[in-house]
Length: 94
Image (cartoon, rainbow, N blue to C red; front, side, top):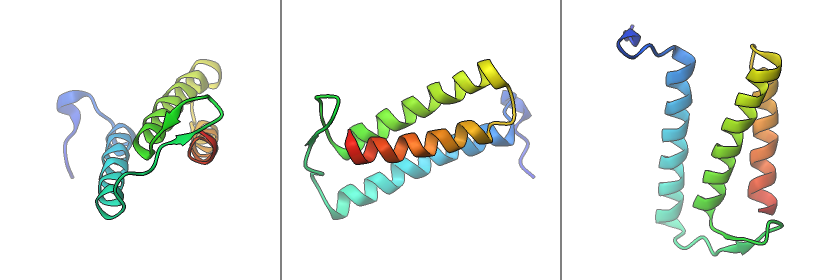
């Protein structure tokens, strides 16, 4: 088992950063096989590419999780569900 105590990390924290790394790798492969990603004009009035939408969804998910922690504490299953729905909506309409 890997010891993460040197940085006071927990396994959920490590999993979160591995998920972000996974998202970046998937987006990189997607961009390699389908370059450009044609910017779309979404409901926010911004022209966004796939990478922009990924950044907006990750940033929004972080704020959703922090808000959940402020109001409800743990467990974070509700925040995760809301973040998934939020990310789907961002990729569909933003």
